[in-house]
Image 1 (cartoon, one colour):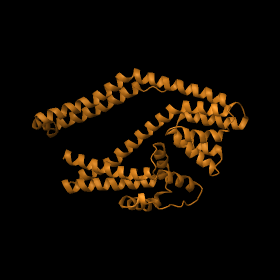
Image 2 (tube, helix red, strand yellow; image 1 turned 90 degrees about the vertical axis):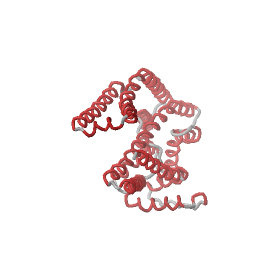
Image 3 (spheres, one colour; image 1 turned 60 degrees about the vertical axis):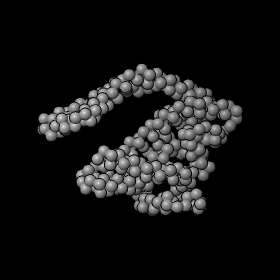
Image 4 (cartoon, helix red, strand yellow; image 1 turned 90 degrees about the horizontal axis):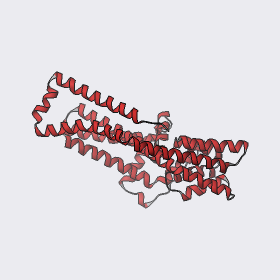
Length: 320
């Protein structure tokens, strides 16, 4: 059973990777479609031989099926999350991909086991696992963005002192800096080129990125455009503050490394012990689940493990 579930999980991940690979290859045209849709302009899609075949047909099917979900509020809010994760997917498309992969996983489990409960549980785990991966990508991308933001602000302030306008500095950052900050500034630059006011483009980027540090930068730029002032000097001060925050976060990660490792050991050691003892003497270990008191104690152990992990996580969590 474990082997079957592992194969199903691998198949689900493979199918999802194929879909993401297709979208990643077509990322630029999708970004253009995102921006043109906000201006009620229908993009013209050119045919390319590289996108022929089965994957292209699957891509077109997903697009057609997801169209009714485009205007749903949940799909729109989900789209912001996917943008923060750096995934070139619309909200409706992500929902359809989840349903397809979950259906395939549940169908395979049901065909192998003929157990509808197990099939439903396996299908339900697929979107949970994919959403956990999206949240991980959001956290990683936000961390990378914050790491680059200090150098980005220094580049902007130096460009402003050299006589560049703020819009020109956005274009410089989009060309010179690596993702994710280069991608975000490129989207902002394209919005401005398409006629979106700079203030609105900054606000859209701020909502899309979801960084408190970048929100501070946007606020400073908007205030400067309203009342005037030396923007380069303000950005230098913000850059220094952000660099100090990054340094402090790194020190906190170093000081709390033991606590985080203790939480991982606390979660992993009981599971590893159970697996070893089950491999040595499976009959005795299964008596835990055959007896009512054993099931109660096993459930209590799981609850206490989760509570302990939450307590340790709260102790080592320090906001900067």
